[in-house]
Length: 390
Ligand code: NZQ
Ligand code: ZN
Image (cartoon, rainbow, N blue to C red; front, top):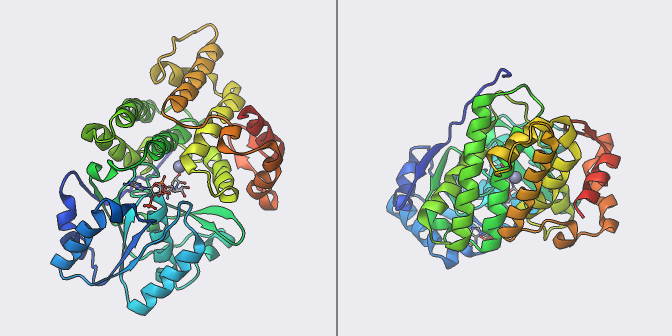
């Protein structure tokens, strides 16, 4: 097990009815004037925004609203948010939504606390050490941004989708009520299931020395998500299934399933450029297509680990003489599961043709960048992986 630091300070309020105390609880984090940040309108339609506003009013907390965050959150709106917060003297950012809204709020917080454009950190490949406090009222179990140290934003001028990674961007407080995910569509529920699984799987397959405890935490999370995913797709108002998915979303990306491992995330980095170039591709859908293809590509470098996952999570019988058979069976079962929950499993289903590959790969390999995986992934290897996803 590698040395590690584990510090995940987000205070979590979990369960029914927690919206009532949002105002008083964010006051405890110093909130004096709040930016209420949300997306394209789901929180208005399902009544959540009104509940949050009632709680702020009851606590006497003034606020300004900025809605309109799009999936794959855009730098242009983030810049607008920074200007608004400066003129309104906002000191606390409250994101009511999924990963895109949270990441937009985090980027506004980075810009405000450092008095700069948040994209500067991406350009200079540096990390901010300050961010204005962010609170989250989560509405979609997926990205894990409610506890993560990542912030993924899209530059709508260059179509580059990139992440800022810093301990400073972990939210101060998160309000997780599974009922607030009852209205999530089956498609977005499926995307969330895949993304949650991926945050653990990208930490599981790193090639590091065995970490049995970390592996078993990961496998337990994957099994719980697999089963709760099926239940939530069948019945969107299954509270316990939604609760499992919500808590798993947070735990899968707060680093607990990666202790003692190196974080590399090659599949995420490839997928971000797919949805950066093709704005209509949802992150989880892109991962459902890419991850099994990547797994097939690198399987020979960690065959026993792939067989272990296949056996423990996907129910494949262990073939000790030919573990690669078990490993391949696991990848087949994973693809079948993604298909079952309504996810695309081919590039074609994502709406991406072989003619599109060059532009995407060019973004991922900008300035000679390669991805660290079991082997170094450059343009040729990425193209091979895309072909396995056809
Ligand atoms: O905009 P509204 O109207 O709210 O609709 C959203 C949006 O269209 C809808 N939705 C959310 N909650 C809902 C709901 N619809 C009905 N009922 C509800 N309760 O769902 C759609 C997708 O929302 P979005 O926030 O984009 O989805 P998700 O949570 O999957 O976030 C995806 C973004 O997070 C990034 C992804 O790259 C992507 O940009 N990620 C962020 C990470 C992080 N910061 O740690 C890690 C991840 O790996 C990921 O990269
Ligand atoms: Zn993800």
